[in-house]
Length: 158
Image (cartoon, rainbow, N blue to C red; front, side, top):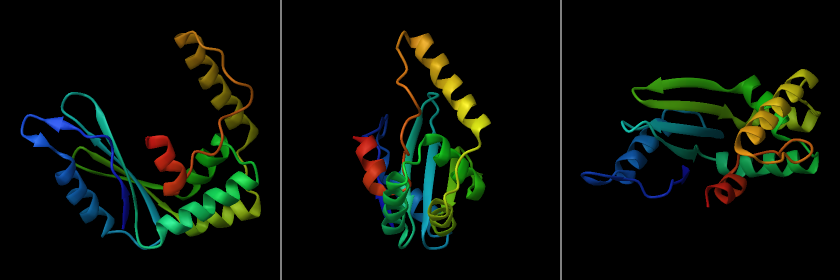
């Protein structure tokens, strides 16, 4: 299993990352190989701590998916569309688990699966609205493929 740990989180009793890592490891053991897991720990203060984990072989396959997606110039709309085609979402108490089997995602990337145009339009509207509310100017186009592998996701976590 490969894990990207979030920034240090403190609680009254100390660092909760060790406990969260144990929970992430236990959850990951329930999934098949070659999976990417996005886990959200909802905190009592209203915040959320995100963890990224990969079951056996998932880290390598996730990076392979990302390399091919970037080479094909896939973007955030494609990432959402392809991910939604294969993901499952479950909960364990205050933990939300998004599980992505990477092998079928790789097949979609290789076959040229793309987001429908109406979804692209909606995503652009969301970005424009967020930019307007924060006084920013949106960049043209859509953000690039966010990633399913540790190389891209670790870059974003830092």
